[in-house]
Image 1 (tube, rainbow, N blue to C red):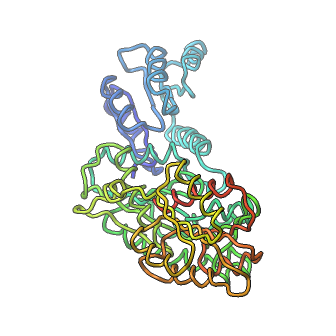
Image 2: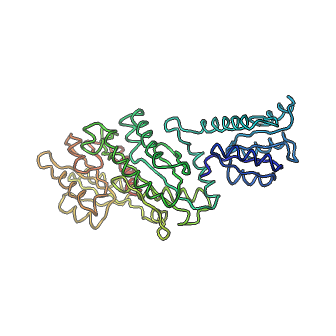
Image 3: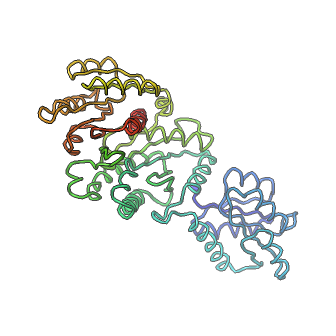
Length: 437
């Protein structure tokens, strides 16, 4: 993978070949040209990390550097000038034009190598994340762009830690940063020098690798991540298998333990001609993997487009209200309809079960019943234990002030009565979006 790329702009033959060999010996890739027009095409298509330009070009060195700096502004490469001159004024002119360094020729091979490596090191240190020490999103997408431009076979993997932000909110920055560092170490252990690993956002990563080993890497990462998950939780949370996220009016939302979802796309499955299309397919494939309750990976196949699978799904905004209190039932119905939701209601559990099958709601607002019978809790367990109903989001509204008892039924949200309409409809919007993604 072209994770480190240097462009040499030099009309000569022997010296550019020598410089190319020196740079490649340090692990960087090199493209070389004697044409300014070709150099501009390379800048646009590959966005190199460094441009080395000599005064052998027909254009004045200071002028060419000004043009390079202007035309490469979005990618901000490091620009090194090579010149036969050692005059102070020539050096000052070039540096004032936008060059990061001026090297007078002839230059010893070891000094040239040391200077180039030093500039590349500083360049990448500024682009790496402080916690994981991985290339951040701009660098990651730049390498992905180069990979696509090469027209070679590749596999791209989008990796996500599910429920990571909720974990950070409960356990804090220190614990969540440790989780990121641990997962980064696991990913690095599964890759070699020909692969690329970068960060896209907090808890999201990109791997570029050989198509033949992509699924083997994904399988290992799923296994390795699940093997260490419980170590990031206290004993109580690890045992019950979830954490409770607190929200408005002391509502409690059950959040599953973190897991990893991995989406994989291959250059052979579709004709990806740009990063946007490839990233869209990657993200949508990862969404499919995120639907699993445990860590999982899904690989895109030529005949099944993960992107279409997600985008063609009809948005379900149906709410079923199971509330014995007539006044509250009517109030919830009226407010939900005013906000554009499709609504059905029931007053008892028996008739509700049949209604769920025919109405197929995305979310149920369920009254837990009285503290003695706990009938609503049993009804919630029944729903969550059925394969065709388990994905339906359930808000359990209750007078029973025992969050764990409520959430252990499988409910997605514990909401104590009395509650404010503004509060419950914030949660409704969030959970319906979650159901549809």
